[in-house]
Length: 369
Image 1 (cartoon, helix red, strand yellow):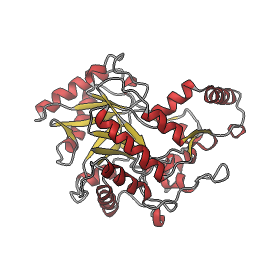
Image 2 (cartoon, helix red, strand yellow):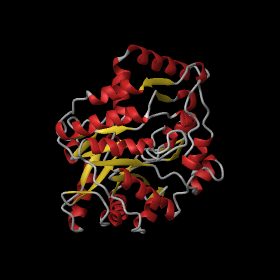
Image 3 (cartoon, one colour):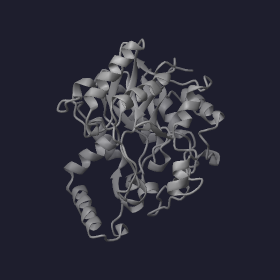
Image 4 (tube, helix red, strand yellow):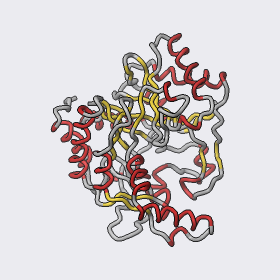
C-alpha cells in the first residue's frame, strides 16, 4: 500500500513572500500567529520540540524522508507552482532532487491556480496570474519537469511518471497541452505520463479533457466537506449567511467558523462509492484552516490519533477491496496552516505517524524499512 502525502514547500523565505507579506514571512509565520477561536480550540499548533524548520536546509529534508519511511509513508507529492515560466517555492524540490540522501519516492502536483491574497484576507487581488501560455511555455514546463521525471525516486505507473494537476477544468488548452506532453515524454524515453486530477469539482466523465487522465483523486477532506455542505441544511444556511455578510461588508467575526464533526467527515469518506475505476481514494489527518482564514475558516472537531488510526485502517482495506488500488493520497505531510500534518507536534508527539504504521500493520501492508 502506497500512502502518498501531499507536501507544502512554503517553509522558507523567498522574495515574493517578503514583498507581499513582510520580510522573513514563511508558512510558520501564519502558524505561529494563529489564535484559538473558542475554548479548547487546538491553536496555535506547535511543531515537536518547536522545530520550525527551513526547507532549504538539506538536513531537514533528509530528516523528513527518514521519518516518513520509518512510519510507513511511501512518498511525498510536492506542490509545484509554475506561472508561464515563473516559479515560486521551487527550492525545496530542487534541493531534494540533487540530494540522493533524501531517500523517499516523490511525485509532483501542479497547483495551477492564480496566486491571490484570498487565503489570507479574502481579497481578490491577483499576485501572480496563471495564463497557461502557448506551446512554447508547455515545452519549457515539460523540460523543467523532465529533470524530476528521470530521477529514480520519481513515482511511476508502468514506467510513466505520475503527474497531478490540481484544477484541470480551468486550463482552456488542457487537451492540447497534455497531448504535447505525452509526445515529449515518448520522445524522451518514457511510455508516456500518467496524469491524475485532484480537484473535487472536476468530472472526467463530462470534461473534454477527461479521457486524458488515467486517475482522479478523491481529495479529502474537501470531497467529504462538499457532500456535507450540499446535503445538510444547517451547513447550507451558514454558508448562505456568510455570503450575505460578505456582500454587505459586515464583520466576518459575527459568524463563527464552519465546524464539522471529525467522525461525520470520516463516515462520509468511508461510505463514498467511487465514481468509477479511475478514482483513487483519499484520507486526511485533521483539518483547521483558521490560521489562514480566521473566522472564515473550517474546522473538524474532536480529532484524535486513535480515531485517525481506526478510520485509516478501514480506508486502507477499502482501497484494496472496493477501489482495487494500491495507492492512497493523504492530506497531508506538513499542511500546518490547514491543520493537516502527519509531522509530530507538541500536543500529540508522533501519535499520528504511529497510527499510520499501526493501520498498515493491521492490514498486513507495512514494510519495515
